[in-house]
Length: 135
Image (cartoon, rainbow, N blue to C red; front, side, top):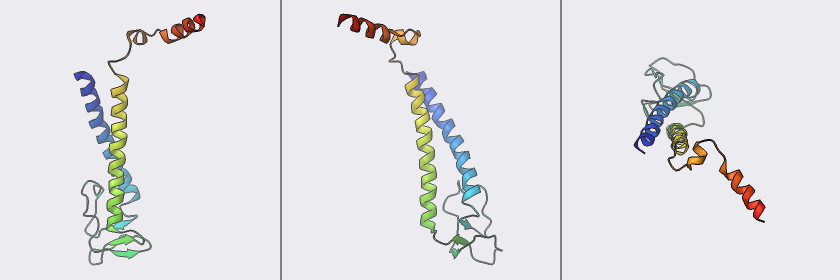
C-alpha cells in the first residue's frame, strides 16, 4: 500500500513538472508576444511569474514589440482578467492531466486484484461456461 502510494505520488510530481514545462513552452509560443507584449522585457518564464504580464496596456489589433518609452500592448478583445483566466485554464489542465495519470497508475497497481487474474489465467471464462452448462 505504501509503495503504491509512493509510486503514484512520484508520478504526480513528475507529470506536474512535465506539464509545467509544456505550459511554459505553450505560453511563450502562443500567448507571450501574441496576445500581449510587455515593454519591461517579458521573458519566456512569464507563465511562472504570473500577473506581471502588462502594465496599463494599450489595446491594439496586432501585437508587435515596442521600445520601453511606449505603453505595453494587449490584443484587442483581451483583458488582464482574460489572461488570468487563460493562465488558470493552463494550470487546471495541467493538474487534471497529472491527476489522471497518477490515478491511472493507482488503479493499475491496485492490491485488490484476484490472484487468478494476476497469474494470467482467465477464470471468468470458465465461470461463464459452467453457468451456461447449468442452464
